[in-house]
Length: 115
Length: 117
Image (tube, rainbow over all chains, first blue to last red; front, side):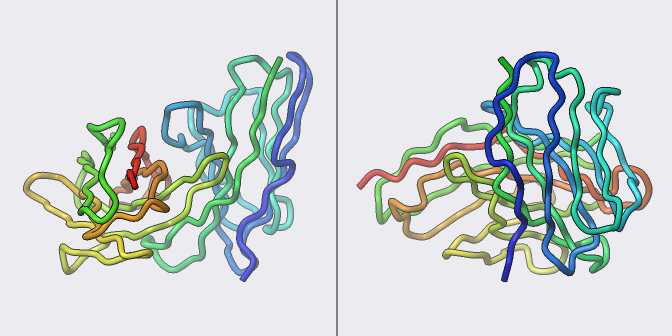
């Protein structure tokens, strides 16, 4: 049973650079979520896909953030012109269409450090 | 808007003693409630969820949680703590409604559980 995978696990970048993260969901899951977790806080919702359609976006997702899921499988999250405040753990989760009660399963996360 | 409160930043318990990690929630209508555990530098691992039915929910690794609608609480419990249970525990809520925001989870700030040998 392969879980949610994320790549890279760690990313260090300089302020102003662009970064891209990848998430591979559990293979039969058609829903995919991105969350951001800062130190001492719980995860905060960023965006959600059902298949390739991006159905929800949080106000936390500024114009510098963009997410895609081009073929309804893996997803990418890009941050342009990174800022020090973007330093956080970026978590991906997936779930299957089992009604509204489906459970979200999380990947190991990508820890971003912006210098 | 939905919210979750975990009133204790840290809970310390001796190995073998029962443990409780507290969670209260606020949501419009009926809630879906979840507990996740996070080990250092790792993602979140699902423990259990309440959807409907029996107020006592059993989950992974001997954990259980009790839903109390009148107190809007969903406390996590385990009869006998293990040192390996030491981790960060998150409670999360999702409202039972359709439309925008239906699927996003709202998390508490987390409670660090330390089980002392």
